[in-house]
Length: 351
Image (cartoon, rainbow, N blue to C red; front, side, top):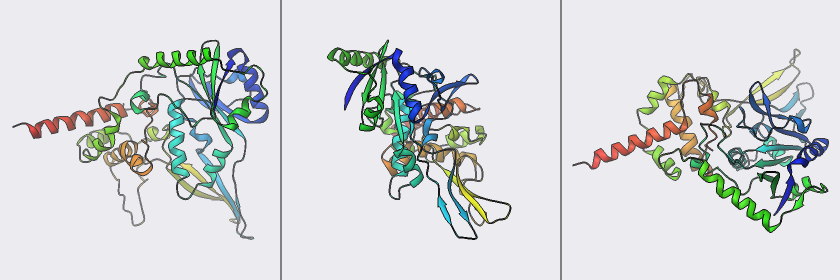
């Protein structure tokens, strides 16, 4: 829509203004790491963060969420929808792409009302990453190093100022009446272009092949021995899925009071890496081994989501690699599959 310029010196006043009318969440330090948490003052916010332990998807798809409450005596069922106006500040572009996938998943076919309520009441202010956030990130290889939409406002660091890309009417209203934010000049556009062109060489390509080949690579790797090797190493702790910005598996459970007359239904995150996740009635478990669960996980990231929703299920944030206690990483896994398949192909054509 438009580009505005916000002096960094005015950022605290703008954040405090947002806090007065919204629940505001953003990156802030905690125990030597960074998390997305509620911000009550601009002094808590740290936009120059490397990455967060848990992605900001929790504001659209909470770890635990009450869906509805019920009463047995009256038969009353009361849905619970979260309508709090929320602003999520400082979202990296990889997490922005993850939100785009979640939008397709939860709003495709039968729209998930609870997700929809969060989405309609949440504004996203993202920020351009100008340097790699950590050693495990591979956003450039996954095509998520930047974003042209999916945000309400997008910040680009110009030194003493932020360029603010205004993409929605809701985003424009966040800046409405805030005097320090001025319209961008032609020189500001040149500054943004210069900053963007300078950032690309700083990010390495970490996959040894083009990511568009990933779905077909996985298709021919279904029976690879690599899955058994990963299964031997995997601890099935589910840390990889717990920190993933695109994982959306969940379970539901009912909690009832001591009288068994009233209760509530909860939705909570689940993980395909846990040993009972695929257990069904009759005692059958169709992904009983860790090897099969690892294969399923990587197929979800590189093929199944693309087949179903047209988007890759991995955005290259690197959180799963950082969290894994036995160093199972997407980069190593995808590259190993590629090189093994290349060797197999060369062996087949060799006379």
